[in-house]
Length: 142
Image (tube, rainbow, N blue to C red; front, side):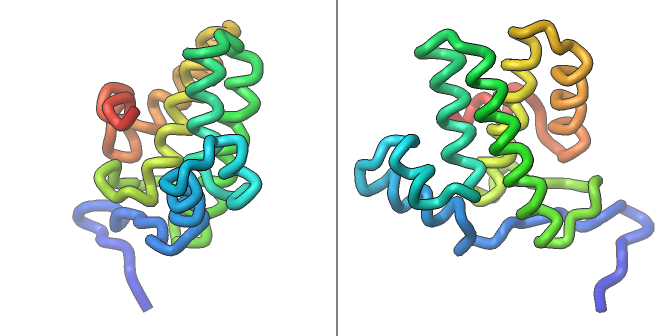
């Protein structure tokens, strides 16, 4: 049985190294693009983050980016909850399996801002801060 650290807050949540993002990263490393990799690992936040980033940057389509990013965000929340996250506490950005979720949150913030969903954009930015990172740090993963 584990107990919450009452002096320092909850322990960091680390997604498993062998989870869906690992399958997606393997497909991407083998040359698949994000659309093909999503068919290999649809539960992987990283592929949804990549699709959202592409829709924002390459296609200039914030509506599609919003949908992709929201999917990655929800897939990541599911994985985080299975890993013991209870809605607060650190989600270390330097732990590669966490990066797909964090990139989805950033893309969701950007897409929400682009479509005028300001409250959502602010909530996402705050979630990154509350997770122990920032917009700039997650942006550096791209």
